[in-house]
Image: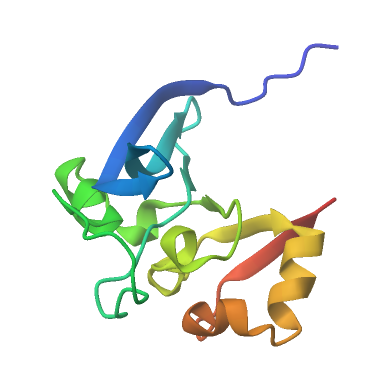
Length: 140
């Protein structure tokens, strides 16, 4: 029997911001990104959603340059948050999970251990506590 599964057709790198981070004896150039995968069945998978504009940057955090949020990147591709079918969150730190509430129709996929830590009320995740109706799939 032959089965037909959707396969990735396009991968988009969405640079959200750049910053220079001091390190011992040098500086590092960092880029904050999201990825968008367009599947052969027309579905869209977004990986991470970036740092939200309305949240103050942590004290001492490097100043970002060339900022462009994930919603603007999607709009440039002719997409809106409702076009995202799956949102994969690598972890719930604010620079990766800042726009989750915009993706109310997407299935949210995250590691079980990280989900449980975030749901425990750990202060590390206070800035990105869920307020939307996103469905969650937990792996691992």
